[in-house]
Image 1 (cartoon, helix red, strand yellow):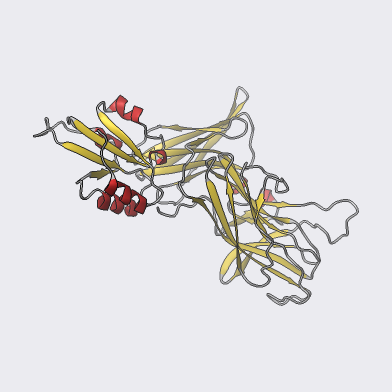
Image 2: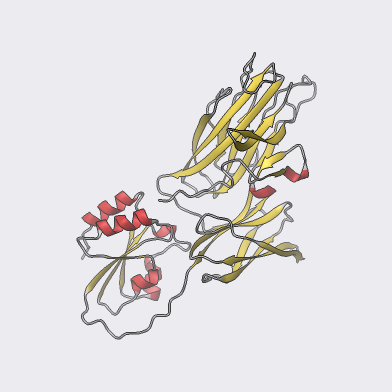
Length: 399
């Protein structure tokens, strides 16, 4: 399937902003800072608060974490949506400069820099938690190296951590991060509705919009979250413009109201986030579909048998071609509309629903029984287009 970005600003590039208005914490959009504070009695150079900033390497802005003449245990983090039981792989490119002089990429008397990437499968916000699954230590001095780790999600939110921990103080002590990518391994389920701490949830109106509709999003929570915003990803993976209409208090709950336009067919991801996108507070998926008025045209000339291969809204052209090849011998009908699949005054209507869990509201046999009685429903779970093609070619109708 098409590459779907789970992380916000996985490039760790522009724009940068002052994290919680601290000018020493210039952080890539979508990420938040963390560091281990110095302990009482430690040497003055040990575990200093780093300076977080933008830095251009290879003509590309990247995230820098630096402590000249000192050491740190520090990095950046981001919470993202997940589905319990899914396995995820995180890859990130890291590089470090550690030297007793100031020449770019010098390694004069360098220290070990100990870069790692990690995943907290419970979505926690403590980088020192024993639950965090870390990669091995890496020493990418003056060159880019890809760090990698995998973990199985235990909750519908997981946390991504980038970490560096130089051993010795050096005149030049800088770590650079870029090109983080998080991908699900194998079958990928998506959570339709994530309710966050403080019963933080998103209500959308209308619930079943058509392209061109103005969507009102109301976020309600028992907590008065700070540094918050609403981010909406359109079906083309670009961000939609969102307008804040204000916030109010209502019987112990804080309400935020936003508006955005749904100008495309497809699946929208609506995230309510804090800390410039790093903290995931709530999430909704919204399906925008153009409703077509069906004009009755009488009964079919003959009551033929129809097999309809129903593809989910997440399917791309590779899945469409796989369905066409797999269903060619049987002359199956292929489409993306559950209503089209169910329509028809036919005695024998069979729907093969491919990956029904990829719909905003999971398609079930009960749904077809309610709306289109008589349809015979089969759920087809396929990890790849090739798996779907092979399954369709070998499928034998029961009964």
